[in-house]
Length: 270
Image (tube, rainbow, N blue to C red; front, side):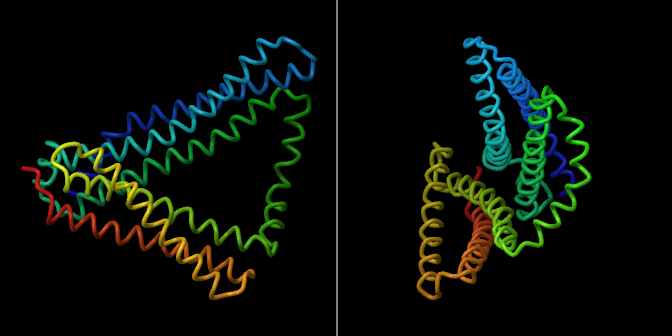
């Protein structure tokens, strides 16, 4: 039954998710085209101020479109979580022969999958944009084909550098922060739906703001504590990154179990 619930959540969001991914790729192609025109205009000393301004504005619009699609994808999944768990549809969801853990994990996993796919699409937009933008430069593709075989060696040399350990430790914070952010959003929606009979969305926004204030305060205290406990050296910096990742993981785990407690014991959809 859990797999059916997850499939149902996926089907409810895949259409809009596909549309957002398509918009991102379309914006990347359009942005690359504007970039190609600007490069061409600069090479041939074209002085059509109006066309240049139009292309610059179009490029900015493409960048904003990609950013908006990324944010919209997150809110799409959070809205799906709210509507399918805390409205009239939620009453039917909680009557299914599944546990509260399965109900919450289905939405959480669906959100993670959707955001990972959207994130990969946004990352793909960068090379698409650059390839289209520089395609008009003379000798670009021959130079690119010569550079591609050298990329693995260049990457291996960069990875072996001593400074790279800071990058790897900081990258640990990305999945931890990603998971914590989703859990905090879902927890805020859950708290707002429990404490408010009306205006649940406004209550959820207030809860989200309050939770982030607490997290920022605790994070600041931990950073100050480490600063006073150790000298400002490389070890301290590594410890700071590590403690931040641990804090984010604690927020994710604690937030999930609090969300489960509220949904299982305090939620009243009747």
